[in-house]
Amino acid sequence: MPKRILILSASVGSGHKSAAAAIEQVCRSQPGVEVRNQDALKLTSTIFQVTASDVYFALVKENPWLVGWWYDQNDEPFRNEVGALQLWNALNSQPLAKFVLDYNPDITVCTHFMPAGVVAQLISQGKLNTSLSIVTTDYDFQGMWLSRVFNRYFVAIPETKVHLNELGVDATRITVSGIPVNPILGQPIDREAVLRKFDLRSNRPILLVSAGALGGGPVRDIVGQILRMETPVQTVVVCGHNKLLRDQIAAQISGAKEHFRVLGFTHEMSDLMRVAALFIGKPGGLSASECMAAGLPMVIVDPIPGQEERNSDHLLEAGAAVRCRSLMTMAYKIDQIFAQPGRIERMRENALALGRPDAAHTVVAQLLEETQDSHQFSEADLRRIIAAASGDAELPSPDTPSSDARVSLYHNDTGVYIGAISPNQLQFLIDQLEEESDEDETYFIDRATLNWLADQGADRNLLRLLTQAIAERGQSEIRWVKA
Figure 1 (cartoon, rainbow, N blue to C red):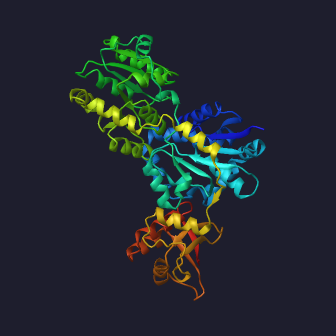
Figure 2: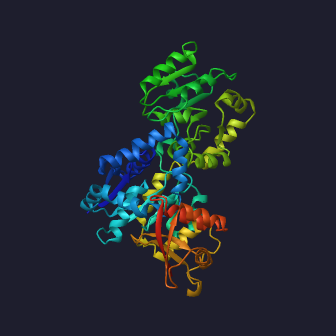
Figure 3: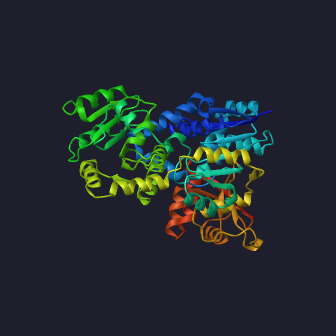
């Protein structure tokens, strides 16, 4: 009987689905394997799909700072398991849960944290017997990817493995695979054939400008800067599904058409990446990983606050990219890259060193060889991970005596776990807040109370935890329980 592999992604951007497609491609080449690749978002309610996808893209376009704020707010581990957010996710993912149970996979691999949370819940409830692996799709790690139940994490770079291990994830359950991309990006190419196909010249470097699948970003400003460059280049502009943008670019370059090729959405990006000298665009996890796999240095433009900013940091540290913080200096900046002897070659070498064109093969090989049972974090584990993520210096080890145990906080009306504080932090609350009796174990917290505690010298981590606890309702009756 073939081994059933279920790949779950989510169409919040194209990256998660692209990673899933790369894994599927490799799975289908393996003997004795049956594979299904499902966009999990399609199996949720309409309102959930709109919130997760359409609202996200609207924020990226109109208020990107809100995306960065949301990213930072949800960086606390297991944040998606708290209160109203947990209920919202559960109510909207019931068709997805039914689909997973009906397919009953032997192996489940998720390229987005939403379906991973659903599968983990089914496993913890004893309804599903599957191994759960999670493939992160950015260079950095964000707290919402942490799952109570899992078999393995696949991460992009060694630093991310260190991050997870420091949080409390067993290093033997973390594989540095890279982000899965089309394996063809690491293969040789007939460069002359590609140049002929797109009517490009071999004696000029090629700039590849990407507007993404949806055709967004400051592409017209980028083209305007390229028109001002001193270096003789030729440029391929990929406008995605945005026909209006394609028409606008065609009009913009009317006096220099011989140096530009303007395309809509194309399935030939892997060919273009392997013949280009520089990629100009946003550092999404998949776009960046594809460039690195092809040995294509990046000129980073307008990264989204949050994950793209962090991706940008890693690429810059590796020497595989430059960033244009102001589009007004882009022409100068790119001219400087080509003017400095050997610089473009060094950037290409650095990109190849960071690239992992075999990432999907690494993931699939590990999935098929996995022998460890699922790991489930205990409540004590969760407290330690949350404390570690907040930078709490008083983080206890599992062997800490009970007299030094952590103090758990819960919403008194719902019983939902908020987080853990130290005995010293609890004593501060006891000293500052009114108690009805010596046995009183609850405190009413609102914004005025938080301001008062701050004025009395409350430490940053305590204020951060209490602020997050009342974020949804503005106030809460909080109960403390010593572990």
